[in-house]
Image 1: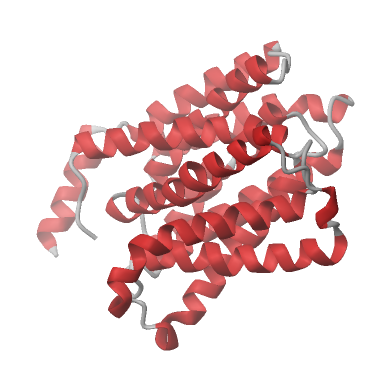
Image 2 (image 1 turned 180 degrees about the horizontal axis):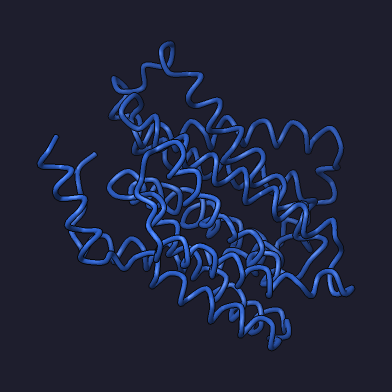
Length: 303
């Protein structure tokens, strides 16, 4: 995949952090109008249909008979498990806190990228990933004192694990599938599965089609789901997945601030300390020492 300029990378990261941060309180608000699985299915299908407009002109790149299994596995990890677990889990936890736990994902992603993608793992990066983990652990610790249920924490961790594995899988298969079709098809496939499961266990009559919900749904489907995933996988495909993932540590900060403003959720000392560690971890993961840079340059020349 073509490398992005620093400006384009910065713009995509800024867009992604903001819209994915705002997503958590908006999703929490939407759940007061709709059952969780039906909501997860509707928003992902809508997101996929929006991207289909951009994908259709590239129909020759679909090659569905050859690539369907890649789309299916990606849909299972990135949509069915990631969105399914998080949408249900938001019913057990404050939106800001739940998002902070899910964003242990960059730590998992850094480990997965080292194991399966051969990305470098040096001392400062390890320390950074551990600090990120510590930050998320401190933020989520209050869940075991009664503020949220253990079920909420487990669902958040399951969502993070699915997302980490899904990101590595997309990165690993990037040279065999078209990026826009990958995002589009996984959203549509995953969305239909979530919708079918939701239809069997939940009631459509429980959805309140009021203007706040419709506006919320359209915003999430367009910017969070469709263009958010496209931006994320564009960034992952153009550079080190673990470094891109480290910036997603910032998303809980946006989520917590927005949840505090929109939902009146409390900002605790645990949150502040945890977020400070998360910010430091991003710096550590993305700082490459001169000796490390020199070593990698020598290896590239040797090749």
